Length: 138
Ligand SMILES: [Zn+2]
Image (cartoon, helix red, strand yellow):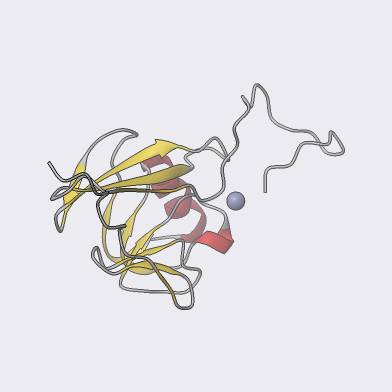
């Protein structure tokens, strides 16, 4: 076993965050080919050719904006493994809004990992925030 760490999973920052090995944009606000949408706030969503998101985010976007995508979509449950292009992808709860998810990526050949959090909240929500309560959701 090599004592060195695996090389990082490649990220590009050109008009957004892009994972070239997966051909996947992260929360792009403009239409792209393949995108992960972390949650249903409008600044994280556009109509993409392929969308990866949680089932609840998928339902909210469908209800609010009409068809989620011009092409395909994939909406795995939290923790369910999805395998694409040599990587294992899992959505994890982000606690930001209903259906919000982080994206955990593991490259299968060497175990390198990447966690994209999107917007998240660490403390327990308990109940919805009220105006002027000092709680923020964004
Ligand atoms: Zn948000």
